[in-house]
Length: 228
Image 1: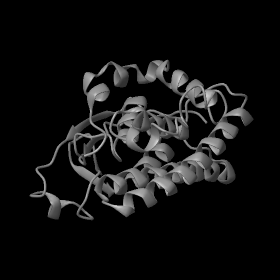
Image 2: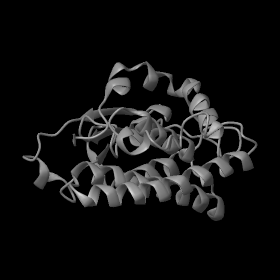
Image 3: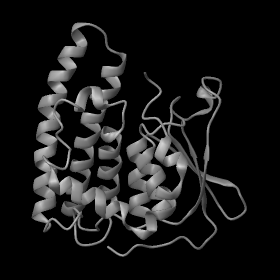
Image 4: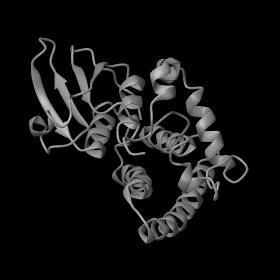
């Protein structure tokens, strides 16, 4: 994979809430790609009807004249559009599919947290069981994938790729205070239980192209979700 940069004046606006949620991977990608972008926090729910699918995140692409040329909804569609456009995804279909299946697994487990925050009574206990089963499998699968690549802190090759960034954002989410209601007892992603994941985290945090992301206090203090 050879990373490409955009020199034709394209810029982006990311519409999302001031939470990690489904937006953090997109923020990291836009920073890593060194494109011109900014974030917009719509008034909600007043702006709900103005979004393509009535929810966020939404990516707005503009040309050099500031004209809107493309609007895209759905977090994973946005991520993959950026990853493909800027060559963060392999051109080999099977290699790309492997990255996408790992990403989809992360999203599947992430959804348990969002549902857990809104659930009550017995449903919470059911979700803990589901999270335990699926997150345990996730930890094993991702650790093996990292080992298969030589445990160098990357899933593929020796350079930061889409799945590296997406996985880092996921593990960052579960290291945050809010989601630990699900994770704190299991400690599936802690260094003592997942040294391969710890290596990934350290590698991404040392990537110079992501230095602006880590230097931002907003990125270090942003809450995980809107739910309490």
